[in-house]
Image (cartoon, rainbow, N blue to C red; front, top):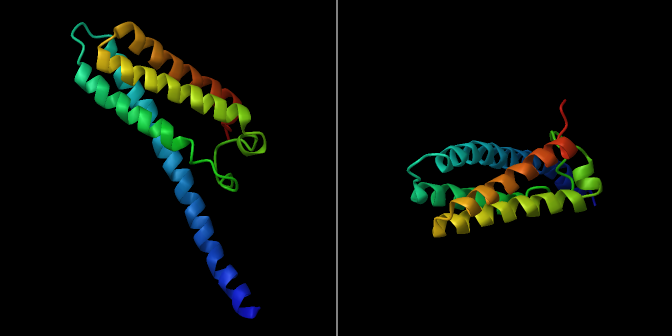
Length: 141
């Protein structure tokens, strides 16, 4: 029994470290999404559209978006800037993450087809969910 208790106590710092790693991963993903989405928006407004770069950007956005679905495990709220409602009632939060992902999927598919209207719609959908999520789920302090 003493051995088990000692092992559990020794593992606590590792759990805290792992939790901090998840928080940093999602913060990095959100930062990259914000930066790359802005760059992509600028690219879509140019007269000569670089579809190859937009496809690369949208593929990265899509990957970050998919990754975020796994980066809010139960117990990872301590030290986070996210409100507890992300974990207490995650249904709407997960719906918004899914909608953001759908927007980035649309952007990616549109970039492959070089369809400006669909690309703009996909990016707008994704960015709209970012704003909605921040209003509902991000603590300001």
